[in-house]
Length: 207
Image 1: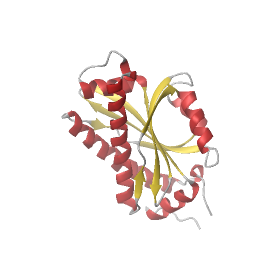
Image 2: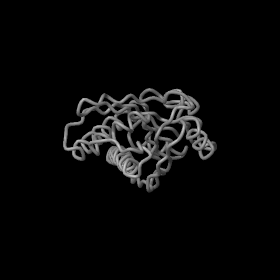
Image 3: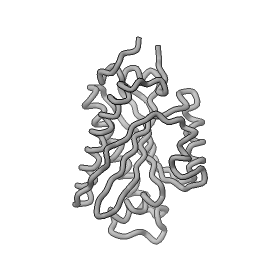
Image 4: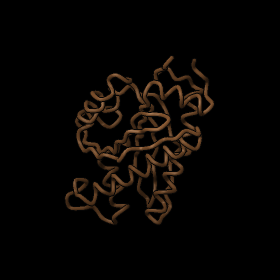
């Protein structure tokens, strides 16, 4: 029997949070290497969030956000998003490039940098997930979206309407060079994949 992500127990959420801790730590290490400077992070916060609440989390439906989006394949399937408020994306670009582009986050170099960092962060999480669970997890090529939070959400809801109205949210902050980047990482596993994942990481089994 398939379970829905909103039905996760505290112990199951704790198990997924532990994976998030490892993945975020790997991401901070990877960012440190790219920036050639120390990057720290807050302890990730994991919770299940209704998708319609995502715009509120990001400052409202009309607030501009940038997202890196991928499909995952292999032993489990689903979708992953890394969403940034525009001000955090601009901070990230300045840290990477040393200065902001005149076009801001719409500049080609900026978008390339954001996509690459989003790819690194999502890959860090997936690598942790794979190592922790023993499952093979293969990401697709990342796609970049820049739009109002409500518009990005609408696109996601259309694609995921048959899967779930909820997502696993992992929030963390990356800090380096006196600057802070707010990161919102969403995982939306397909229903059957959630069962496979929970059993593999040793959380409570569902028959």
